Image (cartoon, rainbow, N blue to C red):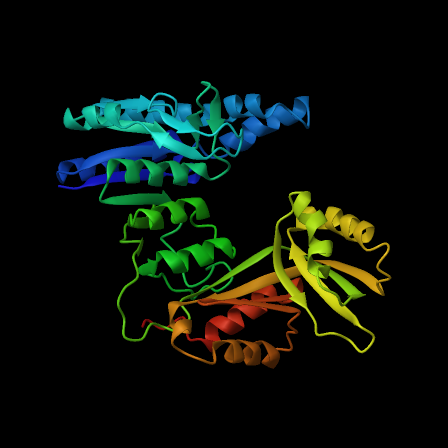
Amino acid sequence: MALLVKKWGGTSLATPELFSRAADRVIAAKKAGHDVVVVLSAMGKETDRLQGLADEITKRPSKREMDVLLSAGERVSMALMSIVLDNRGFPAKSYTGSQVPIVTSSLHTKAQIEEIGTERLKFDLDNGIIPVVAGFQGIDRKKNITTLGRGGSDTTAVALAASLRADECDIYTDVDGVFTTDPRVVPKARLLPRLTFEEMLEMSSLGSRVLQIRSVKLAAKYNLPIRVLSSFNDGVGTLISYEEDKVEAEEVTGIAFTRDEAEVAIHGAPDQPGIAHKLLQPISDAGIEIDMIVQNSSLANGRVDFGFTVQRADFEKAMELVSQSTQDMGVKAINGDDSVVKISLVGLGMRSQSGVATKMFQALASEGINIRMVSTSEIKVSVLVDEKYLELGVRTLHEAFDLERNP
C-alpha cells in the first residue's frame, strides 16, 4: 500500500463530468489499497474570470484582496470533488489552505510555503477519509489568506506529498506527459517515459510549461517522484525522479523554447571594470529578470559591445533604463528587438558527449537560421534567433538529434 498525492489542473476540471472522471482515478487507487490525498486547481478559466472581475473595477487592486478573491476558485473545486466522492460511497473531506494549515510568508500573490500541518490529514487517512485540499493557497502567520502565484497548485501538491512522506505525487493535466518537444510544433514528438529532476528543471525554466518550476525544485529537494499523466487518456505518463545510472545517456533528451524574449544591445560601451554592473544594476533594481548575457571582446578603441535579454513585458522599461544609465558613457548606439525567441537543447548526455553545440549550430545554419546569442550550462545549450524561425528551428533540431527515435 502506498500513499499517493494526486493533483488535477484547471483544464481537467472544466465540467462536472470531468470531476467524475478525476474521481474515477481516486477511487481506483483506493480500491487498489492505496491512501490518497487530492489537490485541486480552480475549474477551467475560473481564475481568469475572477481576475477579470477585479480588472473591471481597477487595474491596481489590493494584493491582499486579490488573494482572497482568487483563492475562491479552488474552494469551489475541493467542495465539488468531495461531494462527488461522498456520493459514490467514498468518504471525503475538503480543506482550504488555511484549514490544513499551509502556513506561508506574507508576500501576497507570490507567497512561499514555510510550514504544513499534517495532523488533520493523517487523522483522515487513518480513518479511511480522502482529504481534498485546495491548491494554490495558504495562510500567513497573521491569519491572512495568501496565494502562491499562478500554477501554485503544483507546488501545493508536491509540498503536501513531501510533508506527508508520500510515495509519489501524480500531476494530471491535459497532455499525456512530457514530450521531446511541443507536439503542436513537431507532431512526431515522442513521449518521454522518464526524466531526471535536473532535466525537468532545465526544461521548465526554458519554456516547457508542463510543470511549474517551483514544484520541480521542491520535489528534487525531497527526492519525491513526480508522475505527469493525462486526465483524458490512459497511460503511464512521464516519471520524474532521481538521476538514473546510465553508461551513456542520450546526448539530447528534449527541446524547449520560449517566445517570451526581447533583446537589448549596447554598442560601444566603455571597456572598464564594473561596466556590466553599471549597465545591469538599474535593470535588477527595477525587478526585471535578466536571462542571456553576452559581452564582446574589447574593441580597438577601448570599447565593448554588450547585450542581454529580458521578458517581452519588460522590454520597453529595460530600454528606458539603459538609455538613462548610459547617458554619460558615450555609447555608439542602443538597439532593441522584441521579435526574438529562445530555443534550447536539454540532456544529461551533454556531460559526457562533446560536439552537441557544434551539431546544433550546423543544423540551424543549414536552414539559414542566424544565431544572435548563445548560453550554455552543463546539460543545456540555448540560442536566441529571430521569431520567424522558431518552428523551423525546433523541427530542424528535433530531426538533427533524431529525437523521434526510441532510445
